[in-house]
Image (cartoon, rainbow, N blue to C red; front, top):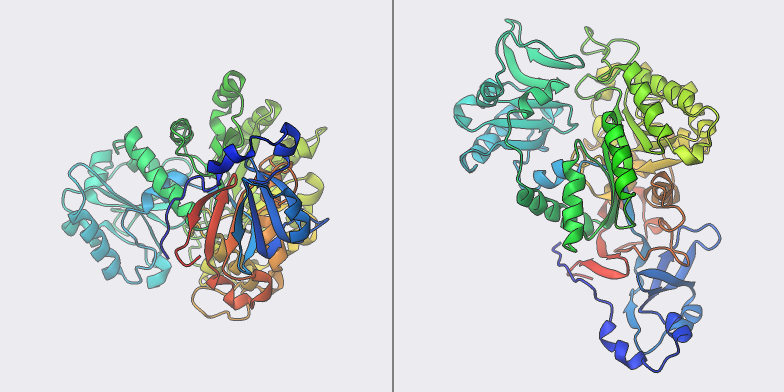
Length: 559
């Protein structure tokens, strides 16, 4: 499926014809009317409609075609949906926009199923890499070839003087070649940093695999991308997002460069999606000062939110559990942050009026973070804080019960479950799977649950996330009835998690996430009605049109 940018398709060229209208009447005339389809508004008072009117980037009316026709006029552009399904645009609650966007043009390793194919693709990428540049990203998965971690010896000869630092798909491990390690000054005596691991073989030799807080040892040797290069890859990422119906992202920036890049694009009118930009929690005082000086942005680009970490990931055996891993019994994972410092940052940032969200994967990580959030919220309205746990992946029964009364959002990523479900039992054993990706259980408590991709860790595509949450069929085809099937949810629940629940989690619930009067006109048109297809077929649904602020910014050729 190909795509093209259409810019403002609203028929403003006929505005002159409306000159005779009174100011009052002009306000009531739609720029565009979509009709002739099935419209899911997401609003509980009127979830279904057949037509929608848009004026000046906002929703003017939603209802039947007869009701909405009252808003047509000489300037109105009519769009025939031809029976297609229209809904609010998708918000992705958690992306790493720089990594995901850069990865679009880097080596692709996600489906490299053997060590030989893994090494071949890296060698090919190195051969085509300009002098001085690195081979990066990749999103490799060692579970595809049985779980053996890669080794720099696999790629050293073929990559020669080209530095390589390719990332495991979860973002918590990299494989560096010898060239990259040399540039970074990594030697036989380099110690493990706190919260990180330099993997070594039986002889003590560093294999080239670096986990969590050891990763910056390598990345610090890289020459940062120029501003122009950042803008180019971000525009590629924006186009990719629009092709998938994503109209807004919550970007978990590792530093301030992502926010700065979004700001430059916005100044050039090249930021075609909405962005809620997060910066590192440890730098909350810098953000506090920035907000004091510059405010919090607008509906196109907002800031004032922070992202922290408790632990690593299940795939890298750095998620923090109470008991050791079944397949790596010398570790139970570990915190990547000093927990006292983390709590101080949460309390300081939230007291400063900033929005705090923190990554937690393992059972112990989630329990400890819930404790911190509970202490930080004492005497305060949870709606003012809207604390979020990013991933909330492994939850005890007690943890599941705590989200709703504490007003904490479970910011979850359903595609991970159909990926991790291939091998998670090997990591932690069958008994510890209860509470893993417990989406249905958390929703049943009334807690706010939101969805996203964690791109580039998983595909950005919300359709695949909906399929994962509803069908829970692992990517290896071995769980056709669903992995931990008791946690399946409905299509309606999945759509709400990608729209209005995300709007609440991003402080936009009064103007986004639903199709209702006065809300932003961010829409997506799908090839099929997801309520009318079998769960197994949800992944085949395609995005035909993406609308942001009333303007067509993506259309499939088949639309």
